[in-house]
Structures are given as C-alpha cells and as structure tokens.
Length: 297
Image (cartoon, rainbow, N blue to C red):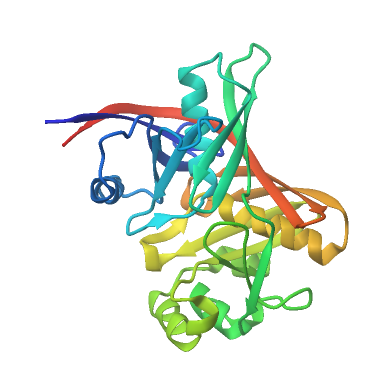
C-alpha cells in the first residue's frame, strides 16, 4: 500500500468554508495519470492539484490540475492554493514560484501578512488574452436558464475567451439575470452540438454584472461536472483582459465577487495590463487551510 499526503484549502476567501475548495497533493511522485484522475473524481471538487518535481531545475515544480473528468492546461484557484500550501510548509520559501503546466510557465507570487506569514497568492495567466467567437445571446440565456432579455449586448455579445485555460463564454447580464440563473444541462449540450467549431466540444458559461470596478459573477460548467463554481480564477483573468480591451485603457483592476449564491462567497482581485504581446492578466486572493490527510492506494 502507498500513502500520499494531501491538504485541502479554501481559496479566494478569509473564512473557512467560504471560497473555492481545493485538494493539493504536495508530493505526487509515484502517482500515475489514471490515479490522479481517479483521486480528482473521488474528491469531487472542481479541481485537484498534484505537485511534482520540475523538468527544468530553474523552475519550482511541475503542477498538474485535474477536474472531475480530465486534466486542465491551467486554472486559477489551483495555482493560488498550491502556492499557498507550499509556502505555508516552507515559510522561508521565495516570494514567487514558477510552475510548469501544459499551458506554459505559470508565475505565482505569495502574499504575506505583517508578520511574514503566507496568507494567499496571486497567479499570472500564462498566455495573453485570446478572444474567440461570439455566440448568440439566446444561447447564453438558454444555458443560464434566464430570459434572453436578461443578457446585455450593448457592450459586447457573449464571447468566448481564454488566456491559457479552458475558454469561457463571457456574458454580461442584468443583476436580476445573475440572481435567477440556473444552468440547463440540455442547453449546454445543444450549444456544443450546434456550434462545434466555435466551442471545440466544450463550454463553460461565465456571467457577470458590473458596478464600476466591482463585478459580481457566476460560472457554470456542467459538462465537466461543475454545476456551479464558487471562484474561477481562469475566468477572472480573461474577463479582466477583455474588460480592459473593451475600455481601451492600458491597465485596470477589478474586485470580483463570486460564489455568494452558493453560500461560499469568494473575493478575487483581478488586474490586467496592455503589453506588447497583448492583454496580460493576473488574479489573487487569500486562502484558509481546512483538512490534512493521506490517500492510501
């Protein structure tokens, strides 16, 4: 029998049982791909993270992220949570980490309190903003289970966007639409079937409403088993880049509240800059430890 240590943390929150849950295996050496996927399914969280030695010794670690059904090229809260766990286990660690992931090299900076204790982290998206196809407002509305009139298209149509992770359908909605949304699995399946080239067989919906620099958001990805996500860093970063692109500025910052409707309120601090290679974004927040244990295989 083999034992593998794990830690669970709540990410993008300062209160236990808020934010987005994450399981982190700080030393995943010896686990096969199939075992990592099975453990992610067993934890039944939106993502589970496995830390391995880097292929390049100049980097900190190789990090693999699995949702319930597949490995992900990049995700936000797993990087924030993994860096937090590693930083708490070695308080003398460097201020920043470099993680090797399928989407590219991911840089994560630790956040410390006045006493130097690690309390959170900020992750930079590994790629600049990539804006994909627009989908009809009726598709986004159907997936969200709200009337089409609740989808706002004055600033932009529902737009697929990413910056290293899975693409998200960024959709601005009314406050009433945000509150009433409930994902329709059948609508998601029909959208993927009706727009195969645009969605590439996958669709997650990120709806939001704005109040200046403050944003309220919800994310639905039922095709991967995540009915609703409490905090989605890999949606917050493309949203930040996309909003900056829409506004035409050189930099911007947004406070994003997510998860409130689930009873797991999260605060994500997203920022974006316009650089020579495009719009680059980062997202950060606090973390809280919850559980420790071993998986025995």
